Image (cartoon, rainbow, N blue to C red):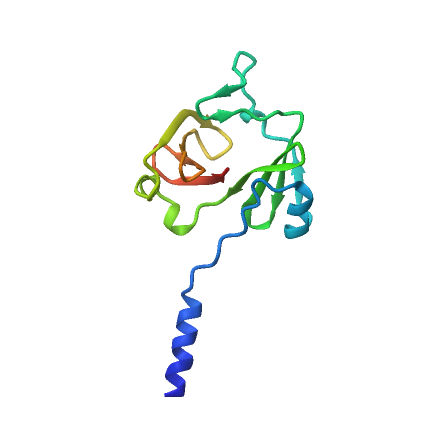
Length: 158
């Protein structure tokens, strides 16, 4: 009987879903570094994210960030934080196993209000991949996905 108890405990702990890393959005850079440690890299935002000169400073998808005060702090495990004016404004991560299909996001509770942004071609991956992004307003998340396969590539928590 004692053996069955140990087996049950082992199965329950082995099958438990790992907890998501802490989302530090809204905190200061100092509190992020205190909780997560030093980043493995600090980079400027990618040039592809920079809006054209003719673009306005805001849109329905949210305000654009200032390239002069924004940095991307990368951490192990594919996690990164977007910092603007010494404050965490977004948390970027890989999708969880149950979040890898764009259709799964459409069926989440609270996903009714959403905004789709214009797709772009990403040539950094193998071949030409057309990416789309959907911002789920009530979930406070933006999902970047491959439009051909519906595979979610990145989850951004605001």
